[in-house]
Image 1 (cartoon, rainbow, N blue to C red):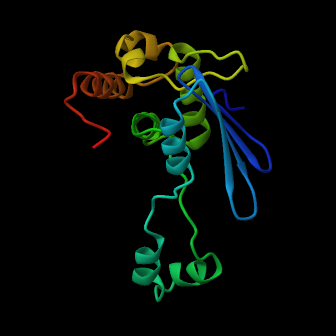
Image 2: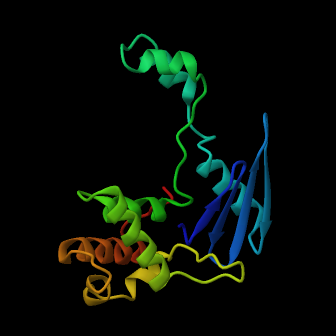
Length: 170
Protein backbone atom coordinates (compact mmCIF):
# COMPACT_ATOMS: atom_id res chain seq x y z
CA UNK A 1 0.00 0.00 0.00
CA UNK A 2 3.01 2.28 -0.32
CA UNK A 3 2.42 5.58 -2.04
CA UNK A 4 6.09 6.62 -2.05
CA UNK A 5 7.66 3.35 -3.15
CA UNK A 6 6.78 -0.03 -4.58
CA UNK A 7 8.59 -3.30 -4.06
CA UNK A 8 8.47 -6.47 -6.12
CA UNK A 9 10.49 -9.64 -5.67
CA UNK A 10 13.68 -8.03 -7.00
CA UNK A 11 12.95 -4.34 -7.65
CA UNK A 12 12.51 -1.31 -5.44
CA UNK A 13 10.98 1.75 -7.10
CA UNK A 14 11.20 4.94 -5.06
CA UNK A 15 9.78 8.36 -5.86
CA UNK A 16 12.22 11.07 -4.80
CA UNK A 17 11.34 14.70 -5.41
CA UNK A 18 10.30 14.85 -9.05
CA UNK A 19 12.28 11.76 -9.97
CA UNK A 20 12.14 7.99 -9.79
CA UNK A 21 14.83 5.55 -8.70
CA UNK A 22 14.58 1.87 -9.67
CA UNK A 23 16.90 -0.53 -7.87
CA UNK A 24 16.98 -4.02 -9.41
CA UNK A 25 18.57 -6.58 -7.14
CA UNK A 26 20.59 -9.37 -8.73
CA UNK A 27 22.48 -12.22 -7.12
CA UNK A 28 25.70 -10.23 -6.80
CA UNK A 29 24.86 -6.71 -7.92
CA UNK A 30 22.23 -4.00 -7.81
CA UNK A 31 21.38 -2.09 -10.97
CA UNK A 32 20.14 1.46 -10.54
CA UNK A 33 18.05 3.20 -13.15
CA UNK A 34 16.94 6.74 -12.50
CA UNK A 35 14.69 9.30 -14.12
CA UNK A 36 14.83 13.05 -13.41
CA UNK A 37 17.52 12.60 -10.77
CA UNK A 38 21.17 13.61 -10.70
CA UNK A 39 23.26 10.45 -11.18
CA UNK A 40 25.46 11.16 -8.18
CA UNK A 41 22.43 11.80 -5.97
CA UNK A 42 20.68 8.66 -7.25
CA UNK A 43 23.78 6.57 -6.47
CA UNK A 44 24.08 8.10 -2.99
CA UNK A 45 20.41 7.37 -2.25
CA UNK A 46 20.66 3.78 -3.54
CA UNK A 47 23.79 3.12 -1.43
CA UNK A 48 21.99 4.51 1.62
CA UNK A 49 18.76 2.60 1.00
CA UNK A 50 20.65 -0.69 0.60
CA UNK A 51 22.87 -0.05 3.63
CA UNK A 52 26.04 -0.43 1.54
CA UNK A 53 27.91 2.21 3.54
CA UNK A 54 27.62 0.23 6.76
CA UNK A 55 30.71 -1.27 8.40
CA UNK A 56 29.38 -4.81 8.79
CA UNK A 57 32.79 -6.33 9.54
CA UNK A 58 33.28 -4.32 12.75
CA UNK A 59 29.75 -5.12 13.89
CA UNK A 60 30.24 -8.82 13.15
CA UNK A 61 33.58 -8.93 15.02
CA UNK A 62 32.05 -7.19 18.03
CA UNK A 63 28.94 -9.39 18.27
CA UNK A 64 30.00 -12.73 16.74
CA UNK A 65 30.14 -14.38 20.18
CA UNK A 66 26.90 -12.81 21.44
CA UNK A 67 24.36 -15.50 22.38
CA UNK A 68 21.51 -13.82 20.45
CA UNK A 69 23.26 -12.10 17.55
CA UNK A 70 26.11 -14.56 17.01
CA UNK A 71 24.02 -17.29 15.31
CA UNK A 72 22.33 -14.72 13.07
CA UNK A 73 25.67 -13.20 12.11
CA UNK A 74 27.06 -16.62 11.19
CA UNK A 75 24.00 -17.39 9.01
CA UNK A 76 23.78 -13.92 7.45
CA UNK A 77 27.35 -12.65 7.10
CA UNK A 78 27.38 -9.18 5.55
CA UNK A 79 23.71 -8.55 6.33
CA UNK A 80 22.94 -4.85 6.06
CA UNK A 81 20.13 -2.75 7.48
CA UNK A 82 18.20 -0.84 4.82
CA UNK A 83 17.75 2.84 5.56
CA UNK A 84 15.34 5.58 4.56
CA UNK A 85 16.28 7.27 1.29
CA UNK A 86 17.26 10.51 3.05
CA UNK A 87 18.10 11.51 6.61
CA UNK A 88 14.99 13.76 6.64
CA UNK A 89 12.74 10.88 5.64
CA UNK A 90 14.28 8.78 8.42
CA UNK A 91 13.77 11.53 10.99
CA UNK A 92 10.18 12.13 9.88
CA UNK A 93 9.49 8.38 10.11
CA UNK A 94 11.05 8.19 13.58
CA UNK A 95 8.83 11.01 14.84
CA UNK A 96 5.72 9.70 13.09
CA UNK A 97 6.14 6.12 14.29
CA UNK A 98 7.13 6.85 17.87
CA UNK A 99 5.04 5.18 20.60
CA UNK A 100 2.28 3.88 18.30
CA UNK A 101 1.56 0.62 16.53
CA UNK A 102 3.25 -0.06 13.20
CA UNK A 103 0.00 -0.20 11.21
CA UNK A 104 -1.13 3.19 12.48
CA UNK A 105 2.35 4.66 11.91
CA UNK A 106 2.28 3.45 8.30
CA UNK A 107 -1.17 5.01 7.89
CA UNK A 108 0.09 8.35 9.25
CA UNK A 109 3.14 8.25 6.96
CA UNK A 110 0.95 7.53 3.94
CA UNK A 111 -1.41 10.39 4.84
CA UNK A 112 1.49 12.81 5.29
CA UNK A 113 2.94 11.83 1.91
CA UNK A 114 -0.44 12.24 0.24
CA UNK A 115 -0.93 15.65 1.86
CA UNK A 116 2.47 17.24 1.29
CA UNK A 117 4.43 15.03 -1.13
CA UNK A 118 4.95 15.67 -4.83
CA UNK A 119 2.95 13.45 -7.19
CA UNK A 120 4.83 11.75 -10.02
CA UNK A 121 3.40 10.61 -13.37
CA UNK A 122 4.09 7.01 -12.28
CA UNK A 123 1.38 7.28 -9.65
CA UNK A 124 3.88 7.35 -6.79
CA UNK A 125 4.26 10.39 -4.55
CA UNK A 126 7.59 11.56 -3.16
CA UNK A 127 8.09 11.84 0.56
CA UNK A 128 7.62 15.54 1.40
CA UNK A 129 10.77 17.61 1.79
CA UNK A 130 11.31 19.48 5.08
CA UNK A 131 10.17 22.74 3.43
CA UNK A 132 6.92 21.06 2.34
CA UNK A 133 6.21 19.94 5.91
CA UNK A 134 7.33 23.25 7.42
CA UNK A 135 4.54 25.01 5.49
CA UNK A 136 1.89 22.94 7.28
CA UNK A 137 0.34 23.76 10.63
CA UNK A 138 -0.65 21.60 13.57
CA UNK A 139 -4.28 21.44 12.46
CA UNK A 140 -3.27 20.10 9.02
CA UNK A 141 -1.59 17.16 10.75
CA UNK A 142 -4.32 16.78 13.38
CA UNK A 143 -6.71 16.29 10.45
CA UNK A 144 -4.59 13.27 9.47
CA UNK A 145 -4.95 11.86 13.03
CA UNK A 146 -1.53 12.97 14.30
CA UNK A 147 -1.56 13.71 18.02
CA UNK A 148 -0.99 17.36 18.86
CA UNK A 149 2.46 16.67 20.31
CA UNK A 150 3.53 14.46 17.39
CA UNK A 151 2.37 17.16 14.94
CA UNK A 152 4.30 19.82 16.85
CA UNK A 153 7.48 17.69 16.96
CA UNK A 154 7.32 16.97 13.23
CA UNK A 155 6.72 20.62 12.34
CA UNK A 156 9.48 21.82 14.68
CA UNK A 157 11.90 19.30 13.18
CA UNK A 158 11.02 20.33 9.62
CA UNK A 159 11.48 24.00 10.43
CA UNK A 160 14.80 23.32 12.18
CA UNK A 161 16.06 21.43 9.12
CA UNK A 162 14.91 24.21 6.77
CA UNK A 163 16.62 26.89 8.91
CA UNK A 164 19.87 24.88 9.08
CA UNK A 165 19.60 24.44 12.85
CA UNK A 166 19.61 20.68 12.24
CA UNK A 167 22.16 19.90 9.50
CA UNK A 168 20.95 16.39 8.64
CA UNK A 169 23.52 15.68 5.94
CA UNK A 170 26.29 16.01 8.52
